[in-house]
Length: 526
Image (cartoon, rainbow, N blue to C red; front, side):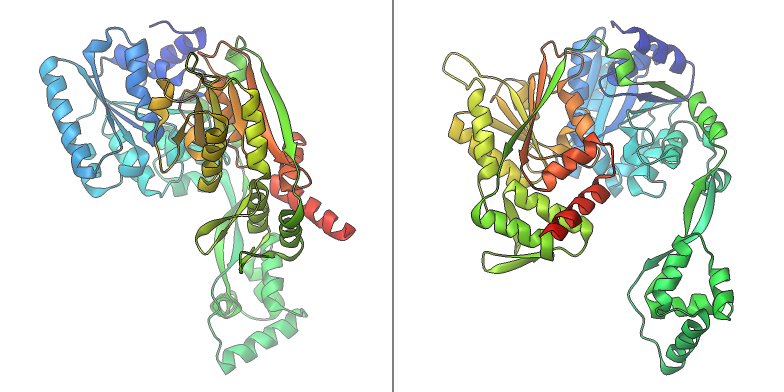
């Protein structure tokens, strides 16, 4: 197997360890590195746990990159019922053992916590367990995390692979390190957080428990002693400002325990939250002792250049009125019904949906304009369409929701482009990679991890992506194997939250805060 220098370094780092994290950026060849390690370990029974879209990628890469691929027996255990999944897994395992092949079972995270599947996984004697995109198990108490870690602990060789080891901060590393080497950060998450975090009391809302006359009178007396107009709001501000329940109780002239008992009548509950991190140098050193780290930009210097362009359109007539009404009033009248937004985050989602061209009403997507669809048709018209003598320009179009995917299908049909889909409802990536259709409509959640889209050199974004998946999706197209300049095209509706999102990303600002501030500024100008 031909490896790059950084891949050889990773293999040397992990070869003699029982458990390692390959903390390698997108496109740096984590899977090939893992395959080389499996060969070096002479692992005969291998379990790969990965996102569902990646289950079929592993067999393809084994056939493409491994020495003597016919001596491997990979099986993708996805897209079938539990009973069928287990039957296929058992029969392929028996065949592999009789043929003297390396058995590689590839199964997705979503199903490993099903009882029958988990029992089978725990009953097997695995030589190696690979957790691909291991940040999927970062939640210490998640069902998938618990099963994945328990299965991994029973194997003599363990490998976690991710390009985002700590997407939300250092605490995300514990479950992933625990899966491969519990000695690094310790086997207890509670002890881990006690060692590296400073806890404080937080407060959150809960359903109000009606107070009797005595409790209501007591609450009113506490409010008067504290000298505040609203006891619940005062407690919330005090606790989130770094105060403690003890200090609040003292101000109110009561005991902590009694104030705690009265919180349900105020619609509040108190919990422990992480206020700060400490001893980060020690934590980083421990993580580094069991992980090989390399950034994409450090090693992918020879990739072809990428260009990013923005194509815009405008809202007019009733669509503009609907957008302005939602922006100003948190609701919009449409199609004989009313769509509301309960808070700022929902408001941003609703505004983004209007810009995309639809709104959900009574469980159905109500189309309110075709501006974005017309814009996509214009962009597709500029590309080479399929003809009887040519397949046309291969394109990936990323979207978020099913109504957007439906619009992509309509635009492709109108412009003569044949389309396949990768989403929660359709899995047609293999067909597209094999040459069927020249357009792949990819739901961003399904198309941002672990799949190869280098058949295309053009990626179109139906709307801005603002949940951290943009870079991952870009790396699906511009990665090793891509030998042509890459073009990213953003479809943006002018004077909407879509422009705000792009401005926030360019300014590296918090997207939600930036967009809400811009909305407020526009409202004040009206």
